Structure formats: C-alpha cells, structure tokens
Picture (spheres, one colour):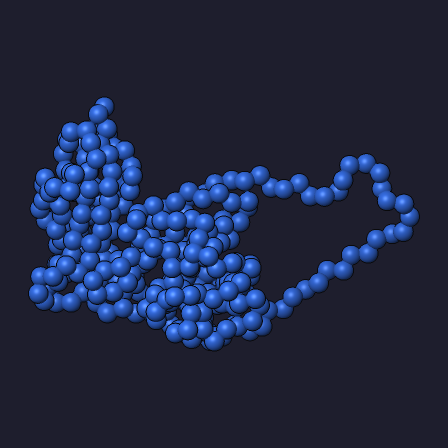
Length: 282
C-alpha cells in the first residue's frame, strides 16, 4: 500500500494591495538642540528557540522536515527566521536536509490580518515544480509554527506580485499549510540530534506517519551495522504519532541511527531519516 500522494500549497484569493501610511513630521525652527544625540538605541540581540522547516529527498518525492533551532534576533523572531531561510544564513544541521532558498534577499514582512506578505528581492532559481512548491511550504510552515495566527502567506518581489517565484507555481494567490500527512516527512528522528553527544543508556525518539505504524531501524558504527530491528509509532498514518526506541548502554564512540519506511507494494525503501551522534565515555 503506498503511503500517500503529495498535496502542495493551494492557491487562494490574492491579497488586496497593501495600504501604506506616511507619518509626516514637522519641526520647529531655531538652532538645533544641544545635548546627546536623539538617535534610537539599537535593541540588544536575543535568542529564541523555533522550528525551521527544510526539504528532504526520498526515492519518490520531496518532503518537509522540521529542525528545532536557536536563532538570534533583534526583537522580531519571525523576520529573523524567514530571513535566515530565504537568504541562506541558517543552514540545516543534518546534511541530508536542504534549504531550497539560500540566497534570495528578504525585503520585508507585512501582516494583513491572518495573511503574511513576504516581499523578496529576487526569484528562486534552478528548481523544478516540486522543489518550488516545497520551498514555498518551507516558509508557510515555519511562519505558522512561530505565529499560529498566520493562516497563509502571499509573495511579492520588490513590492510587485509575480506570476511565479521559480517558473512553475502560480504565485498570485495565497498559500496555506498542506495536510501534515501529505507534506511532512513520514519518518523523523528528534533525539538524539545530529552531532549531539549523549550520556548513559541510549534512547531515540521522534515521529512517524507510516503504514501499520511499523518501520525498520539500524544502528551503525564505522559504516557497519551493529544492531537492527523494527519499531512502532503510537498510531499508523494518517496520524503523525510519536515513537521511541531503547538502544541500551553503548560503548563510547560515534554512531549513526537509520530508520527506514519500506513500501508495502514491493518492499523498496520509501523514506529514511538518520542521525549521527557520539556516546560519551562518562
């Protein structure tokens, strides 16, 4: 039985033109005031933990996958997250994930009720139709995760509504989140994280949306499989349900955990996720 067919962001009613309000300031004549400069003091940088979405390729399709990251911002967490994705300044930790934007300038963000308008300084390049749709989903899922009141995104390039962002998807409407089971990766390891050092008995966990809630796992060291088996999530697809796996005490060293969804039709690999981490000697 196949997993599911992709549902890409749906085009809705285009945004009405934004109304810009100009605030005119008048100043009294006379000599300039003495004393310290009246320029505003820049806000100190802060950090916030957010979930950013990247693309991950599987044999039959391209999906979204989330990474929880700590980002630096100057008071606007949403803008910092979107800017990091579109300009490519925040790369995924997992080398199997990809940012499909990476280098498009962000001109700014503007809220219009429950719609967020994203003004870009250029278009996507070198992407096919599916990658263009997933790139849009990256921003939709990231924005709505940070601010749940955001229902949809609309796009402009240098203030004007484009016909398309990358040559394939009509960008003149609004884009809302697709269904999780048809948009997000079927298998995801949340712990241990990529590159993490862990202590004590090894326990892995994550979420899954697979047929009969069952998937395979392998533990590798130095490219050699040292342990393997099957695991189950709490529910089968279409639910995205949690799973956990106790791998016991392991000697100090570097390991890679690979989890795999197999096609119910022919047993071929349908999707995977992997994390490489270190078990400490303590």
